[in-house]
Image (cartoon, rainbow, N blue to C red; front, top):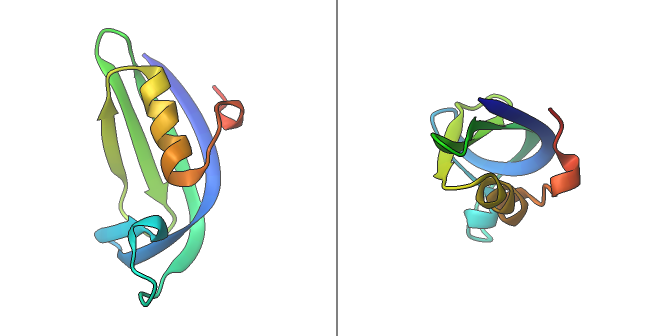
Length: 87
């Protein structure tokens, strides 16, 4: 199984167990900016999980058919580019 890691900062709205990124909020909602650790786990056989871990919040994940798709989602949601990932 392959794992890649990245870290960024993002605006998060909600509580520790029910949150979303500010890109998914309305203008009037308050948010908190925090560090977000990301991890992609998987391989071509079992597919890939993109794990979001905002500091102070529970982790969440999304499932992807390919490594490229997981990296594209991280870029779409948080602006994390392919060059931001490390092993």
